[in-house]
Image (cartoon, rainbow, N blue to C red; front, side, top):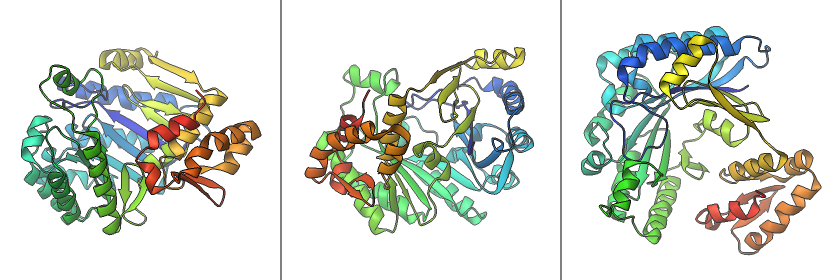
Length: 377
């Protein structure tokens, strides 16, 4: 196992676009931390020395910064007690800008966290209010500077584009503000209308309109061009990094490396099967407390493994290793891949270099269609 993901589902308020498992039941935080530490201890028992070796830890949510420093310390103590964490491990924590004051930042510095990820989304206060973020643009800027002054040298920020009514010029302004912060990593996503979210209900009620697809593509193209010019590596469709500052934890997902997931709603993968904990706080707590953790899972078929290999591989700048496809899945799968890729190779949207197939800059804009054509299920 190479990584540990810890899900902290608590949010002070829920953003209108979010479909991740989260809860505003803040009084349950202490009990949840207790059960989370217990789950880590239980599930680590019986693991081999190799399985205990960890290269990355990621606290995501939800909002991990809704926990106190002491609660966070207990979680890290549980992980470090139960796993052999590399001295060079990347340890990331998602942080909400308005949770960090001088006292909290001082506490953070006492934790093993060496990478911070801020969900800023936009530097437009009107849009921040629209999506129900709790911070202002200036607060986000200030907290990044504060963390840099405190010594953090590996900071990532999340941005969104494609808000209803947003113009290309407004998106360019967000990009320039992000670059002015001199962070090491930027993740940027088009606003998505996920089923069951408040945002989608607003769309269905006719209260808002999606932006034009052509404008969305222009926004993405502007992002790619500007960040590359600024020296960022476009290493995954939605992710950009300064040299040697890729997200090592997320990269393990894209390269099919096994990982543990702890907490309500968290997923785990051992290379053959995927399991996940219940998306319900009370069910999760009861399951851990009674020694009967509520989980579901599936063993991946050969076709599912192939599809995942192609899907996540083509999202990265390296692409898909054709030799790996043949050695793991066989010549039949390689032939299928090459046959279905040929129209996209001919059109210049895919290319093959040194036995790796990857999207070209032209192909990135229709990546979903291309990946779908190459999958079997």
